[in-house]
Image (tube, rainbow, N blue to C red):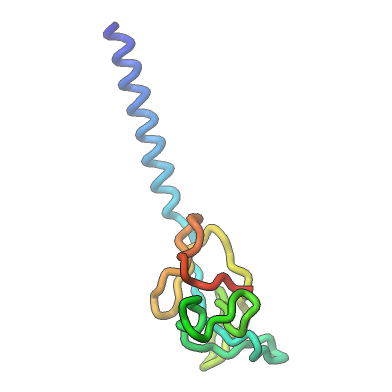
Length: 119
């Protein structure tokens, strides 16, 4: 009976270590920046006009949903009030943070409720 207790405790220890290792690995995700843009401001060079991030908050009066006038733009290069070289398609399994520091999405756990998802 003592041998079975040792085996059970060893098994629990191994499973615990594996679980801790898995959870630690889940924190290793890429970080992507996001800017709120006016999707109707697309220029021939592929750039958009950046607007205040409140416009992409679906609780805000200016939000028009996923086909609306404002959307998150992920991973772009900003130059003044314009941004380019990114995408309006929300990447998965990354942490997305706005320039103001608002976390829009954490790792692979999905987006923050109350924020637009892009188009």
